[in-house]
Image (tube, rainbow, N blue to C red; front, side, top):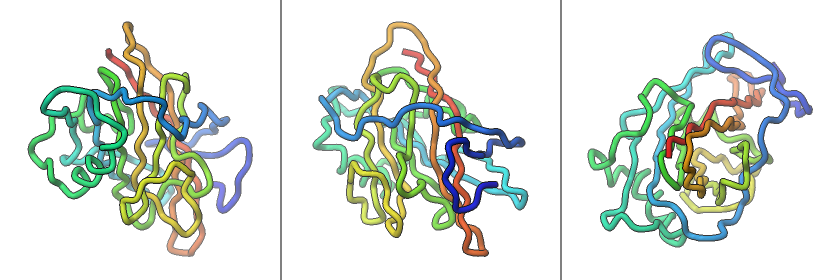
Length: 211
């Protein structure tokens, strides 16, 4: 593994294999251009790391889809309240199931314009990698509003900084596709070892738009 080093070609882990990734995707834009989302896909993603540094993933039972009661557009200005309520469990038992099976993590299935809120469950050993975009996507023009939430659930559009651990990111798919499409995307993670060293991992699952 690459330990404490940043290079153009980076090593990353998926279940059962280690491969090389050449910077797939572009960062999601940091600032939203309009209100567009019709639902929030909330993903509590548990990440496990084996002794030989293989990563595995699952979405926990608290994951789900939040659709406003009025089925209207979710405004960017209201996003912080939604994220805080989701993280606090205010919608426990009230969310619709995620659009994919629980064992499909870290793939994401979408059906309409939405916000995707991803919360890491391996804290404090695993965070979104400081200094770099937490999410990169293909077809970046179809995505918007990449935000990070620090431990106080304060939203910021800038990349996570060293010393400010980030476990929650939110980004938007703003295009209502007429046809299905699968986009590769990347999650940039940093894993802290007991030795004090860190391992940077870039994972490249898919966003499967079934709109």
